[in-house]
Length: 427
Image 1 (cartoon, rainbow, N blue to C red):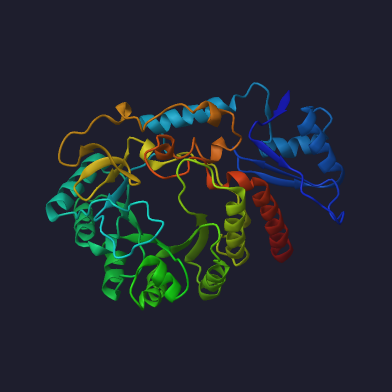
Image 2: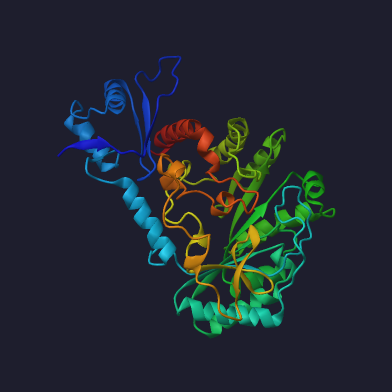
């Protein structure tokens, strides 16, 4: 059988000034997610085979290993067609990965004033009881009795929790199986709300962004004194209730946030339900600079080393079968007024309302079933599925490509070092 290297194989030759790992090469296949490190003669053979395209000189054992991980594929295999068929399945609603997903904004009001917020200037709206009932009826109808994921978004959704409770109670009464998650600044949780979230909302996870330690966090978010400690106490209370919390740092060039990352690591290292990661701030249309992303990587390295990213497989970006929930006709973003829009980052892209008929999603600009020429030529396509659609359309200040695009080789080296440490520790 004639074999070629997969187009989605990324090869990196790390520097080894001490000669510690002669001939070393790192391989990552973005289609299968496989990651391999080879050294010595094996490394030299792999490097030569990738650069020349000649696989016939590889040993039988190497060919078998590389084939098992998807680095080597049959010559006639069309990988791009596989991805485009997958994208078409998602956009047509026939894919098993589309699911029933409803992102619901109960309010656009917020008690914080984050400098990086992309929702600045959006008119304040509050979801009413009537709209919440209509939203619940819409979800029940669209779910067709199947499992549902609800995401509470805003604004700050904890400023208007009555619709959350009402919608969940309506779904429960109708026998619709569901779970929910929430994006919140975390400063408004009470013991009663945690209890409600656990037993009525069926809340499984919360994302909370920290901007600093103590007063620095409060100043940057425009929150009153004591908010930082209330947020931290809330994280502990949520995880005690069995709710996973993902802590996030938004990083901009020139900000010193290593102390915050180290503080998070020390405070939550022993809590298995707390995750943590750093991400760059929103940028309109363009890729983030490699310098900024290296600073983000330095913060994430702290989290990786302290176990917040789980096992070694979670460092490199994973292949996505659905690049964005909004590109599926089975997924919806619902505003406080019950409008249906393409994306929470672009609430003006309204195409219907929960109370009446909506325009067919297949006719919307947001839906596509093919990749752009630039995406078709990119080895990272499997891990982004064409990137952020709202950024491509220029409808929101988002970066189209995955944020890690400029630091792939650094991520591969971190993956390799973590893998070696993991093997030393656990065998």
